[in-house]
Each structure stands twice: as C-alpha cells, then as structure tokens.
Length: 409
Image (cartoon, one colour):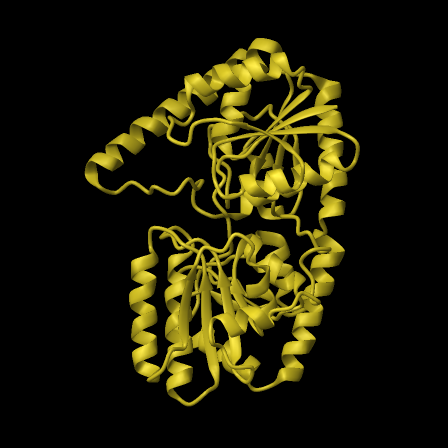
C-alpha cells in the first residue's frame, strides 16, 4: 500500500513528531510511505528514517488552493492509496483535493485537545484520548479510533546517558534536575512554564538543591526568560536554565531526575523512567501515580484547575525528599508507557486504519462537504476579525481542551 502522510507542521512538537515516527513504523511493516510537508527541523528526522519527503512552501494559506492542487497531482502521479492528514488543515485539503477529485480515501488524526466543529464527519478520525473520542462520536463522527500518542520506547529508555548534558550546562551531580521539554508558546504551555520557574526558585531560595532546565523555543521565550531571571535572583544563583530548541532532546530527558510536562513530552519523559508531574492551566498540576493515572488515561496528559505554584511546589518537595520515591514513580511511569503507548503497538493500529480506509474508498457526501467548507470559511472570517481586534490566537490549536476542570483522580 502507498500512503501519503501530511503533518500540519514540521517544527518540533507532539503531533508532527508522532506523524513522522508512525510513518517510519508503518513503513517497517511493509508499506511505501511518503511524507508531504513544509520544511522544518523534523525533516531531518524524516531523512534519518529513510522516508521520501516532498516539500511544500512554509508560508502559505491554510487551507491552500495551491497545495490542494499539488496534493491532488502528487496522489495521482504516485498512485497513492491513502492520504493521512494530521490536524484539520491537511485533512480539509485531502478531502477537497484527492478525496473529491480522485476518490482517494483520506484518514485524519487530531492530536490537539479537541476536534474543530467543521472537521468532516465521514472521514475516519484518529484521536489521542478517550474523552475526545466520546465527544467526537457524540458530535456525529461516523468512525473514531483511539490511538494514544505513541512513544518510541526503544530509543527513549532509561539507559540513555545524560551525563554529558549535565556537564555541558554546569549542573552538579548532587542537584535534583527538573526538565521541561516543550514549545514556549502562550497556548496551553506558558502558565505551567512560569509556575515551574516560580516553584523551583522558591525551593532553591529555601536551600533545596534543585534546578530546572527548559528545553524549547517559541513566541513566549522572553516572558519565560524574565521569569527564570526572577527565580535565579530569588535563589541567589542560577537554578533555571533555558537551552533553546534541541533537535534531539533525549539527553535532557536522560539527565533529569523529575519531568514537568504535558502531552507527548510527558510520555517521552515517562519512557526514560522519570517521575512525572503533569502541568496544565488554571493552576493545574498532578503527580503521576497509580491513583492519578486513570484521569490522564481518560482525558490526556493535561488538566485545568488547581492551586497553582503552591501545589506544584508541594509535589516537587515530595520528590526532592526521597530518591527512593523518585525511583518507584519513575519505574511505574516506564512500565505504563511501554505497556500502553509503545510505537510498535501504535503502528499496528494505524495500519488497520489504512487498510479499512482503502477497502471502503468512500468520499464525503455533498452535504458534509458543504458543512465542512462553510465551517472553514466562517472560521477564517472569525480569525480575521479577531486579528483586527488584536485577540487572535496564532498557535495552530483546536478548540478549548476537553478536560475535567479541577479534576483529580
């Protein structure tokens, strides 16, 4: 089977990393897989996996009539059997391009925190949490599969050496290192980043041997850097460090004693056998334990509502006090991610989705196409109006996350 995988972006991030890793894993199951995407840091990962890459412009409309035509031409010329779009713009282009014109099956994956209302309901949909799957089915989607964000547990594992990372950044062996690996953007991420800086600064000022390293970059870098500087001043030494974006962050995960994070980054940290504190918005944080895991397995590695810095600090204090406790919770995290989130398991599920789509070879009806197309137009008009008012969110995220507010398992 020939499959065209179309990620929505190629910066380092969860959905697009999943797309590339799964593309390689599905290829290893005997299929021909081509990645169709804009340029970006993850293209190096595509090349390293030995996958063919077809480049499209970085600066373009979303969705784009030009890309729609190129996508259709590519599918026709390369005799593609299934187009797989990640997040809504590639799916829309796939449906209105090769789906409509060539009747090529389209599969869509949404690893954002919810599904946009105008997503075509007849397109086979893959989502990352049980809560989003239930919401999509209730919204009328005909076929929704749960495929939790996969982790390559063979390359992300506790035996990776983090010593060189500590040495490079001047982090002593006797300091407990907290790592956050994520994009520095306002949407979903910023509050947790700022709270992490505050919690580590307060504990270090009280004499605790702890540091925080933040790996990533983005539009909120200056705001995070300012809060890091405040924490360092409070502690009287450097306890929060920003490394910028690192193409391969495995040494950072390996060097850490504790992971703060959400989404795919949280899962990668778990694969390294590290205890995890999930951070979210509106003050949310929660330590991953056997008691709290059902909440995250239901709604994803995120949350809303909590006691902010005080609660995050209390979880970190608990982990600082006992290396044995860190080992126990880290071991639990590793076992959970291997048993439920391994990339090899995800590749089998994804292959089944492709085979089912190829066998069905269905295309959305005219009513559904009109509903989706109209929804895109309304969304674009709303975005232009918000941009005019200065209130638009520039991150390519879907609607408000589907989570339990103040939820604790």
